[in-house]
Length: 459
Ligand SMILES: *[C@@H]1O[C@H](CO)[C@@H](O)[C@H](O)[C@H]1NC(C)=O
Ligand SMILES: *[C@@H]1O[C@H](CO)[C@@H](O)[C@H](O)[C@H]1NC(C)=O
Ligand SMILES: *[C@@H]1O[C@H](CO)[C@@H](O)[C@H](O)[C@H]1NC(C)=O
Image (tube, rainbow, N blue to C red):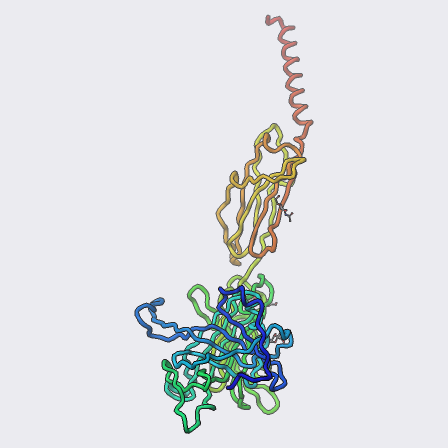
């Protein structure tokens, strides 16, 4: 594909300059030639191959990583981009058969929210991009066209894509010139020394990580698109849950478009779980709905979609959280007879386990909070049958250090709470009457006793 065109305009992205740590290099072109604002997205990737050299040991399997570049051509409608933010992708001036540049065409596939990739660089979001060989059903490693899987994840969420790439050979058929071959893959290169490919299948998730609370409902986002679908062809969807080394199939669905309706076979291994066969076949919507969530629903969900010769997966993480219910052991606090008092802060039925309990005291007429955490002790965690936890923190308060009017705060931090939650108590005057009357009574008894003794003529 010839990119250089005199109608194209060159601009540079201003936010690129500073973000050298970011793996993504983003270049955008205005394809005014077609009257469309298409964007080129350039990603730094790695080609992952099994059986690398000695340096590539990873958990027993050997993998070799080779730097590669992935160029999306005319990516998505980029209405949101102002012209001063864009520049076209220019291939290297001297084609090098060792370069690995995958040039991607997205002929009819529209990936929702894929424009997030365009903004990732400016948002300083890292992009993880890996490419590996792929063998479709009924093909073998050497058959042409060749296939690759491209896996792209935006760090910190946003979107995650798994693309099946199929090589194109349009430009290489000129009889006069032997095409340049990519030295590693032994595949013909285009005139600009790129591997021309087409996206033929994609499975994506726009919410690859989601947090939900116990008892609530959640939809795990997964979808697919394919270049061409054959009417009546089965679409197979499987959702698996992996958690702490265990795997379990949650849902298995085969659906197909019949003359007037959608036919489907469904197996579900969790109550209150569903996926929509209609949406799967008509919209490529493979989302899974889980209702009445429990702690045991937490884990890594794998959405696998198969259609025709292609099948690939997407991962969605489900995190369960439940905020602690925070209570103090006492409603009122005073120091009758100036005895030290024990105060407990209970955090009940929360999830996950990490919780931080801190204590503070603020003297009356003082702006400053003093930490008391070093004087406190934490009970061991208790786990309830529903998987939630409870814990208590205990603190002993001394009357000298906490005069009436002192505000004592138990502050609890937990991932389910946006800001730490406080439970507070103000130290009250000890019941003055009790102390007064006790002393008075003692005095009175002493006086009476002394009088009786004197009167009785003891002395
Ligand atoms: C699937 O459908 C649901 C309900 O209409 C919608 O909220 C969700 O965004 C869709 N997801 C995808 C991937 O299309
Ligand atoms: C399924 O949902 C119903 C209604 O919301 C609820 O009563 C029931 O307990 C749920 N089943 C399970 C196993 O959570
Ligand atoms: C909670 O207490 C701490 C310490 O006294 C204080 O700094 C913080 O502002 C309080 N937060 C709220 C929300 O009241």
